[in-house]
Image (cartoon, rainbow, N blue to C red; front, top):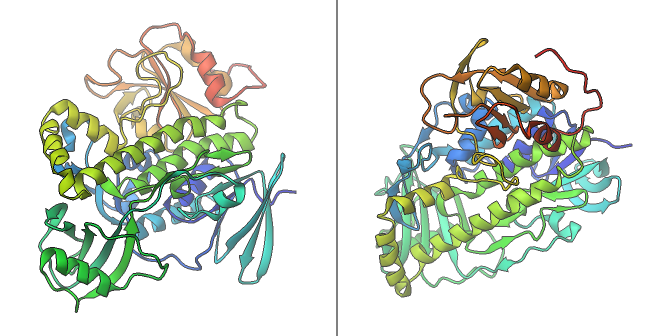
Length: 496
């Protein structure tokens, strides 16, 4: 007998997001985490525009206070305004990863997820009908059995290794450093500054703490696995900037590399991967944590439908099909940024050419869409041009009052947005009433956007359009409902 429906290994942002998504979908979920307590470290400092939308779709944004977004960012050090693309920005900034993890864990536990800290994954036995893992706990070894296992356990991922999933890519070629420095009030360099022997960044986290990043040219990866000492970071900072910060206090010191790898498969039978377990890369543009969160948002409703018996037979396979290309594109853009921004003098011609290209609005829109995540479009097989794309946040008004596309997605159910008050469409969707919310509404004002001219729109729980039509009749709607929300055994219509 299974202990739970899904075991998630790793209680970082990806694993905790997935736990909440699974619970919203009705799945039992147990999270096991090696660390006995959260690190409390700042680590990632915010999330992308699309991850911010995903949190809004679950009603989580108020828990972060009032996130401050930055319209201006960079791509490979080239500064530009991301709002050249409607809905895009350089992300919510200044939110420490420790805060993000705390919000997500509170949410997941409220929904009924079980989180075991101090439980370390040590082994895996995956069969055709279930998966069993062994864990080391403070009380001794334990075995847990579930229908599925998800590794959200970081770039070194013991789950990925135990499942025999390859992790091809390029090894590290250089080391870079970061530290949260206390009480020095360093000159801000928020988008980075190229110097003769490398690149440095500095940005205030609070009135007293500055985050610094030091990327010396030609510094080989560290051969030992020992934690980096601040003296090493301060020495690199002095060599590049001439500033001596060796006597400063610090809240966190770490190092990272430009290693770039992606899992060969995001699913191997009953084992799946998400977040850093599926992809590692240079942390350019602050995209890594957000991509992992969006992996979880894509996977959660599908896996919950699978374990609760509501899924189309091919639904779970769409996780790899949709998210693996997104991960590959992430690796492409972070490698490109590293080459442009961190290359030595040999990259000067590339930097000059890139500065010319980024002056064009079309180029800005393309890059803004890539880094913000809002241009991700899954290949769902044709149909209306909106199909597969993300549905932008939109205020709506209807017979039931005011709402929004984000608010309708709070329960992580499908949404059929009836924009033309069409009873035939509502009747067609009625057999899926237990998994799809049907709402009759219109944009609160003149849209001139995605909803302009639409008759109806079917939205998946992850906020992507599953079907759209500009004409009455609902051609293709039943097929889309079946594909994304599974077969129905009782097709008796429920009053629309």
